[in-house]
Length: 528
Image (tube, rainbow, N blue to C red; front, side):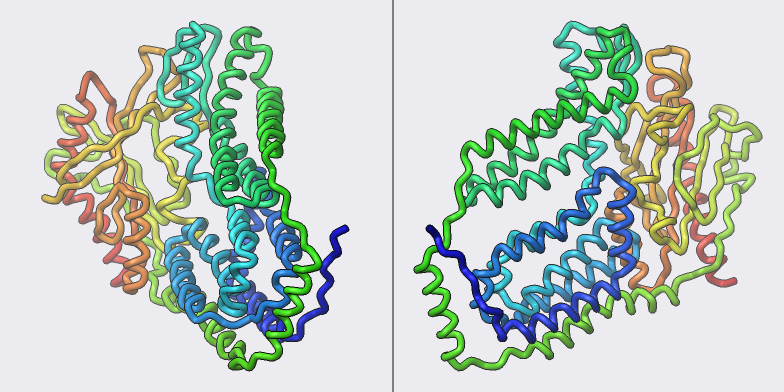
């Protein structure tokens, strides 16, 4: 029979433990908005509800290591303090441009880094997995949704064609003889993937001892839900097709999907358990070894750890980013921008009384905007400008919620995306391009739009979300404000490249006027 390990509380843990708890409360106070944003997402999104379980699981995992931790001597680590400073600065950059993923990751990283900063590397190494598991509390993963949706559509259509069913596809929508289908957000499988990776990682840690087996099972936990979701989507379309659309087209669509996913994941864990490696038991010799280490700990003189000094440094570093953000906010321009469509951009292009199409990009809560059409004798082009200032988490230019067309838009569908290289004001620029289709898929008489999009950030032009955020953070740090805008051009696609030709001509004639208008909008409110 294996004896259990019961160690008396260690006095050398008292001071660092109190310091750690005080710093934990201090960090939660300064970053309470970020912490509450994480919890709010847990509450609002079923995809991230597992976040409520992460902290209790981490505490339990640490408790399991109490016998290993007890004899260790906590000692502050200077490099962890340096790393914490870098992470705190990353939080500041993320908060300046309202990037939830960056601020939330940085916040959790700061909580994790409190451990090596106060307790040292030996303690951190002993509980490395529980600390790493804390990052599953961060509600990220939605960025993968577009790619997962695209893969799901690719596989489903390929499998349907292999099954002998003809398919007409446009973007994420497709038509088969029995009806129309589309791959929407719920079909991406991101919920299955996040759930599988979270549980699979914990399963691998608890059931395997070798790093190779743990990594292998985590890879399986990533791959299996993706493939399972493809099969689920194909199965649902086939059920609908052969049942005359009486099955798998309503709520049962989701029920069948979760049942299938549940069976697949259960099989994955059952198979994984077949090769589980039991955790080594603690023997009496191990207890004697721990006791010997404890005696050496108290016999060997060592420099007194400076927990209070480390605590002061960490406390200052933790408070610096929110205080810095408040100081930068006072330098930001709070005036409301004024933006109106000019009657003429260049001599050849005049404001048209009738719109190109009933279309407006789905950009949320801009500080100012206009959506107008300009025409020459040969062509007509729509111009949308969405201007953003005083950006925060509810008003920001670059966001996954800001798109040309919503998934559930009743009038338009996004059927193709690409990029185009063009010269604007003498400089080469890469634009985002898109094709939008009106009405139902497969109809030949529907209107189609060619759309070009680019960001303007304090005078810089870019089509990259990452660069737009980077420019925004850079100019905020310089005290130049956060003024930014989206420029969207659209025109009927026409035959061949007719739409692209019209948009290129419009930009060549009016790019300077558009960027000047945005610069004047920024400057006008600076001088008011």
